[in-house]
Figure (tube, one colour):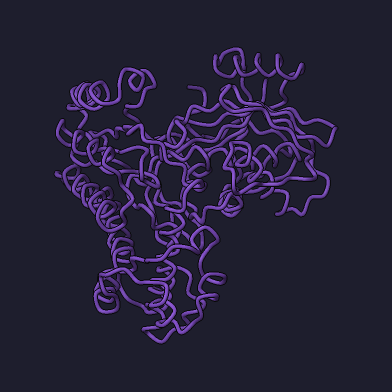
Length: 473
């Protein structure tokens, strides 16, 4: 694939800041996917694209649903990506097209961008990235664009196809308007702008899309955003398996409900400890102010919360606020009608998962003889926590995880938001061929049918590179 890695390419004067995404000069004719995209662009728009932008998806190895709580996560970029061919135009129009006929064309005036939160259609994710750059620079006269998108990240699979599109769009807008930003700045802008679609997510997906490097996973930390290389065991592979259950987190309240439960848990803990609870938004912030370890926070969870769900009335009584204030000042729009909040379970998952991330990184650094077994154990513990405490799994994912473990995975867990999508498994390399064959037969051919196999729902992967710009040499 042409879009692997992120080593320094040849520079184009004024195109990107030195610490920004790479710009590469390439011969398009030498890369079949780019050449096909160029030919389709010419057929669609009657002109030649000026540049191409690539942003990868990601697989999160461990650290689920904790980035929006402020805690470090450990993802890696994958080869599956979003690729967009772009032609800046003099008109004030944005024309978006997709190589997949399932996604209809979209056009709008570029000075009148409207994002419809009630309809999570594909073009709205592009508009999120565009609007993020527009607002960051306070641009009044954006350059119009013709864009043709080609995506090979399975949609609604938990591999971050939506965030990759937001990141790709942000970089497209930046390049078309001849502006410069660092990778860190782009990741932060795209994190904020994806919330225009209605999901209250953290910054993992956008950060690894820009900061990913071939051959390396990354420990992504927040406030401030930073990335640390994590060298994975060379004698093991990671296998991604799609449950074939689609889950669009912008189309339901499942994801935002978990965010709000964690937000309420932070406020409960802050009030219990005499902090300014009304300003507390995430659990990591409360931990820092208390100066406690993750283990001590887990003990505090046992002390503060009961295991039964909290009603709206009980939340209001504890925080001494009105129901109206709870709904309008704390809860986001699509969670205002949620009646019960499982604060104990969500907080316990977050603090234990945050500890597992740090343990995972430490094992990779120390590389003991039984590293694969230890890492696998952490992944297995993570899935149990996601299933039982965070309740973001589903029967198909649980079965897929069990099948992967049955045929040689040392560890297997859901990855991404959950409620469907993919599982990621840590597999000793010598067991990889047997695992791939057995999982394909046991899960896909028996329960999903031949079409799932043909869609390449099961594959081994290594860390890929981050977002970059291609220019035709």
